[in-house]
Length: 382
Image 1 (cartoon, helix red, strand yellow):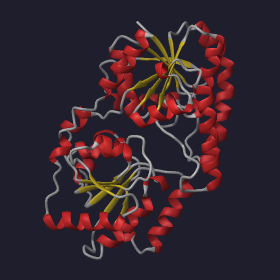
Image 2: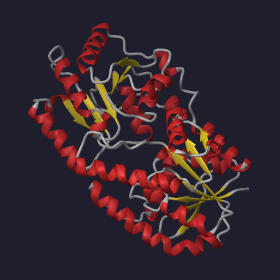
Image 3: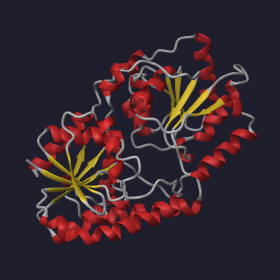
Image 4: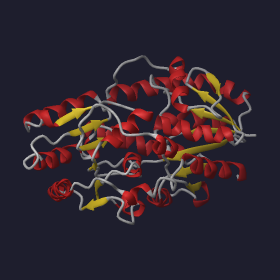
């Protein structure tokens, strides 16, 4: 039995995101003992056989920061403060005799504590998930982008001390190899979806949704290209409804809403906010198609969920997506060609056929149980 300490030093007011909980539950069911480090205390968590959506509601007692909306800059400083507090617990972590300390992502705030734990306890296995690259030239606020890139480069320095690095795509694996990471440390896994939830959930919600986007409200997600698509489509279908399911920082959301108002699209856009679980899937299945104009992705879980729900989906020709959707499960257009995407959507609505049978076939190919099994075997065999 492996004793795994999960480093969630900046555990938020909404608990842990559901995909990670699904993976942790699978590890728990394989016989691993799981402990959560919140930055100020350690708590054993029992997930085996439990509904993770209900379980996540109980995590509110473990939150380490108050209910408030953080700016990107504000959260960076908060994460630094929580890590400094967390370092005071290094001796307690060492005494816990954990076999593994686990970073659920390779953002800097999840790497600092394991880095120092590894210095003082060389026997413990440090395993980390690497699921994203932060380029310097992404759209958005230049200062925020520079800080994000700087912290990303710093995280790579710390990550080199990890024993195992789980990457979700071949592109990320190649990036780490090119950056100088030893091949033996890098394990290719994937991302997953809650296929059982998708299978059992019916369409619902009192929404008229023609197209839907689900994800962060962020420039890299192509949110402004979506508005250009909408602006073209509404000239043919004046009452066309685009739903936005997700959240973002206050500054970006305000800029996005300002653009919507400037383009006179307010009556065509619905903001649904963050949704999860059965409610999220139910709303997805209520839509006629899915828009995913992202200009940079490592995997795109929300796109996979929509496709597996049977929605016709439109995306740009990002290399990572082209490797996943090889059989026409997603309608791919050249990056930036939103006019072509708009024409395709108009054609879809002219046809009146809103089913994606090829997409549904991916439902059992990606599961968190498979991802957890790959990670467990790598840890066990180290």
